[in-house]
Length: 487
View (tube, rainbow, N blue to C red):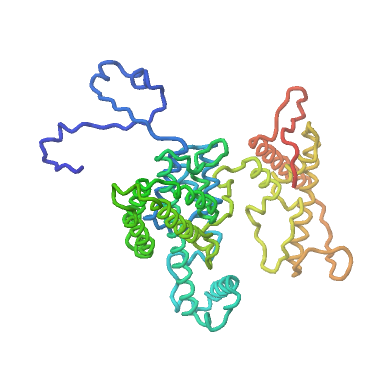
């Protein structure tokens, strides 16, 4: 609310503080901390934030499974399963669900190049450029793999026809998703009606069987609710004439509440509901023999076929993985990373995380041990030891690798100066000969100091990462704390 600066009510407006506290209700943290004179000036209002699985179900029902919600990317069973598991096991908050959805969208758009056409298809001018050729070929290949009979024939023979086919695939996918949401909404409406009338209905809240509404959502996405729909049809046949009238009225209200662009596509179904309502005799004629079973049987037969046609797998659509995450599992390390495995992988294979500078024509091979950073060299020697590590023996092994490193780097530098692309090979032509100049005592001392400094620095890195445990039993030993490591 905006109040003008010259208003006379500014001094009378209360200051409102919203505090998130998890302290006991009585006495609360505020009552225990502030004196009575301060508390007398405050007016408290307590609010309980909803929690539990019902919150997650409500969030999903009002977003991805709401008929008025039109997402650009439809989340699939893989993401839904991970959300439910993470919410129940680790973090029961809406923020956690939002983070997972954001990461799912990030992975979807970064892992599939064709997601460029999620919102719209590039123009014919853009796709005709040479730089767009790989993208166009990939799109043609994907369309051909879905419908091999069409291939690259007259149906997709030019860039404009490719754009038209992509737009048709987008419209078809979004239309199928709308039908899925309508079908799910009808099934849920009938289920809620049955339970409100005292019938058992479907076992959607059967904790003993591990079934909940999220499993039903996954079944709707996969087109795997035929048995449930058939059971609801059987239950409809058993309803009384007055109960049928109420159910038909609820369905009519459901269709009227749909957005206009969806209601127009479901107009035939809405008219069938109206015809079913008109087939019910007026109140007072409930006792007409055979009317109730006949109306219920006819309507149930039509409804089962209608819902099954709505709930078909989204993977049946062409280019479905552009707009649908499908059954691909959610990359759990993004939200719950394994720190230990990542640190060890970084030490064992550092160039998988930070590639060294290489020439384009240089052969990509696994680096030798001497080519790794100092901390990685020391960690490899760490894995070769037993439970106790002798510092001097560890230093000696490290020194040998640095001597090998120094020798190879000198040979590589000599090869570059001689105009060769690779270091010398043993024997054969082109052998590089150069007199080895004896090092001065000062150079030897400087090299030894460098080795010691590099060893201490790498040792401190491993100690900081928690791979070492100091022991008072042997002053020149440290204890290894990480075992069972595999390359």
